[in-house]
Image 1: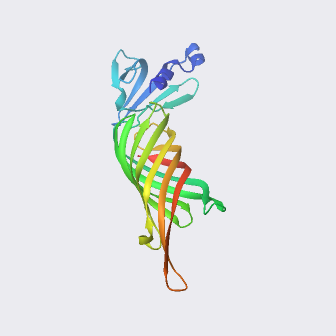
Image 2: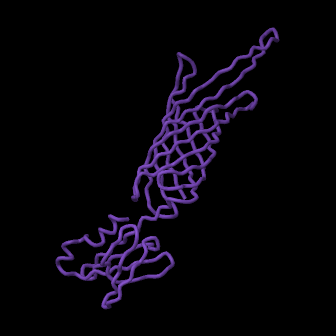
Image 3: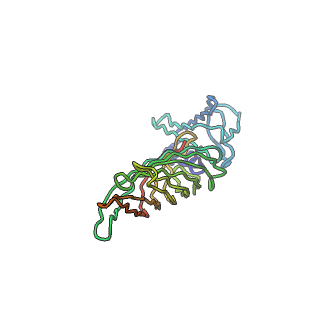
Length: 251
């Protein structure tokens, strides 16, 4: 919020040079509105507002501010500045959808390109901007009927106290493989590491975009009846390594 508030005092220098009157309206989260002129800022603490045509000065805590509307009456220019309000501590929920493009290798001679889908929901607790931990469930589609259900733990961290901030996430868990016959499949490791951006700085919904690496493996067991009624048993194991692209919301 620091730079945004500095913008309040130092933006539109030409208009200020022309001695245009500026009025600042501070909207609080409880519905109150104070109008005057911002005369001092204590970064990450409070704003001092002087009521117009009065000597009264009040200090408004930053964490109570919903938005600031700045108006230059003689120019007709109005700008709205919303303080940084991303919830850096507390409970969170995230919802993702994305794609897993890559090649599926059926054998050493045959491979095909396939764009799989992924989705997940997780919830957890953010201890501070840099560290949060949660748990989630998702689904993965890597090749036609190869659909998996990962159960995982995750950690998240956001790098900057800005409206647009880089972030990282690491997920680790167990992948439940599905098939027409559940007894024929066996899941394994689920791992996902990504880096991306959080867009938005409000306390309700923020948007997430990331790119990451997904690692999963499954084993399928087969029993084939031969011409002489003997049973041929064999298994196939796939280890998926895919780049994923995701869009999500955190709320």
